[in-house]
Amino acid sequence: MPDFIARMPKAELHLHIEGTLEPDMMFELAARNSVELPFDSVEEVRAAYEFTDLQSFLDIYYQGAAVLRTTADFRDLMWAYLERAASDGVRHAEMFFDPQTHTERGIGFEVFMAGFAEARERARVELGVTSLLIMCFLRHLPETAAFETLDAARPYLEHIAAVGLDSSEVGHPPEGFERVFAMARDAGLRVVAHAGEEGPPSYITGALDSLGAERIDHGVSCEQDDALVARLAAEGIPLTMCPLSNVRLRGIARIEDHNLRRLMDRGVKVTVNSDDPSYFGGYVADNYRAVQQGLGLSHTDLATLARNSIEASFLDDEAKEALLAEIAEMAISD
Ligand code: HPA
Ligand code: ZN
Image (cartoon, rainbow, N blue to C red; front, top):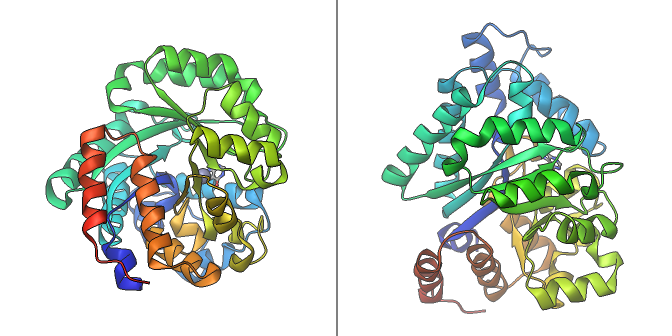
């Protein structure tokens, strides 16, 4: 089963590049850039990854990102992720980045976009992994800051496929970002949004109706609203779920309680992703393994999840067909 999971061609659609910063790279970059860390060892860092909710994670995640300063740092971070993802059978990745985390520290788009471009091109050539970038607005900051971010991104829009919305969810409903998302859509960007990770189902509806989201990132709380589940299924709106993240941030007590399988059974197009793998104890194949074991998924279920990930991606039809054909060729017996 683990081998089957790693061999299955798949897309990863919910991955924060800043959340792939492994503790050893954090120390390496801190030394390279003379940044002081509040930790003395990799073990101390890992011990600090004991989260109680989304905010307790975000505080540490933003602190960790402070070691990222140069184009080489962003290149090395992204290359490490894409290489790791390739070994999990990821053939296409749609990766979030948080520009405001960097521009607030005086690190501009020219710095991180150059590093991202270099790593993505190398991954395409050397690993056969294609990728897209999704620019997230931080929802704990005002919409005016999101407008400034969109403006700063203008020279780089050909390298950005979509916009997203992340950071502290509760108290920051999607409706507050309606205008900046409309402007992003006008600029030709696709739209996704985090919703229903800790927030209520109304945030999912808001992301769809106010922002024009084409996919919902997480979407766990949709299950509290039967009409919403029916809508997601009927409209084929994908959920990019992150099971290990939900357990680590205590939205869900145990992997065995995760609603991913119930939602699949109700016809929702669910996908499996890693969110912030360095912080949540697992990359994408680990997430597939966790739900396979915790929810008793069959080979057929796993293939459905992999197929969903390709179908829910922003790849063109030709690229989707090629990957779906590879999945179809895998011998599946349950
Ligand atoms: N939720 C919201 N914001 C985030 C996350 C997440 O899981 N990871 C990084 N930023
Ligand atoms: Zn996320």
